[in-house]
Amino acid sequence: MSIEDCWKGLSVANANPALRRCRECGRGQDEGHRLQRCTGCFLVLYCSKSCQKTGWKTHKLSCGTDATATERLSDPEWNVQMRTLGFSNFSSFSDVVQQWRDANGWAIHLCASVLVMQGGGIHASQNPQKIVSLSLTRRRSVTPDLPSSRNPSTMLVVEDLRLLDLEESLTKGPDLRAQWECGAPARAAKREKYATHPLFAGILPVVFTFDELPAAAATIYIAQCHPNPGTRPFAEQLAPIRDTILEDLMHLGVDSINAGFSLRAVLGASEGVLPGHFVRSHGTWTWQQLFSDWSQYRRGQHTGLDQTIDKLRSGFTPSTLLEMFQCLVLS
Image 1 (spheres, rainbow, N blue to C red):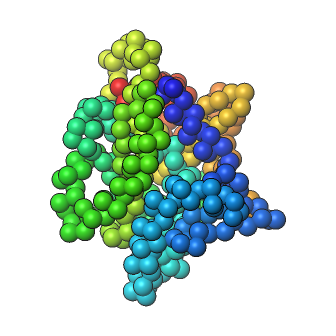
Image 2 (cartoon, rainbow, N blue to C red):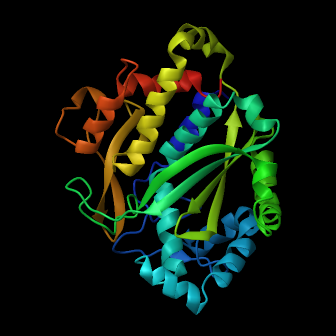
């Protein structure tokens, strides 16, 4: 399996454009079928008892931890603070964070991988173990491109992102090491899943922190894979402008989140990564691509996308940059 296969795997995970969907099979919510929450953590959604039973082997590794965090953060004092931020309670906040991560999953992977490349590569990110820290804040304004303040894909904005040393980070709070240890089963499951992958290199934790809620951090784990050796000659040709290409890729990743043109891998005759936006449909937010091919891009379709393209300095188009990423990733 190559690094391209890893990204195709991410594409499959995002094949359903709806944000609210079954954790196990990916079925979306519609007018005739409502998803049900896990009764343990009240965060994960399933379409049926069968899917919940099938998914329990994996979900049980985090369900107890999620339930404890939800209970701890759902007291009246926290809910008052939630309402000042525009959320009815911690559960509604958690829903938004989960849907935001889902909506922007491709861009999050892109940004994390670029940080690793800018920080010395995959070996440096594993020795010693690094984490990616994304500092988020609540979006305060609406624009013509982002007309709804309730769209979960755009409710949070990336304020800062950086690559940090894990051990150093764990010393900055009295409970951080204990919280990290709670995630050990989930990390072990991720490693086991990719253990036989010939290019598997390790796990990269991505920690989301919230400026207004410093105690409500969330963590996901990305599987890191070495690049396909067959792409090395191409990567070597691009080496003189590698740093500029990485800067452009970071612009595409961060701006797709902050400016609301969510990047997503599409399946079908013309596979690739396209920009889109989320619209309300059948009781959930659903991704719609801005166009079916980058050759159809025209200025004026999306102001945020126009402004991002104006920042690019490598001379390559967004589609070419994203294709290069398949070759450069973690090299």
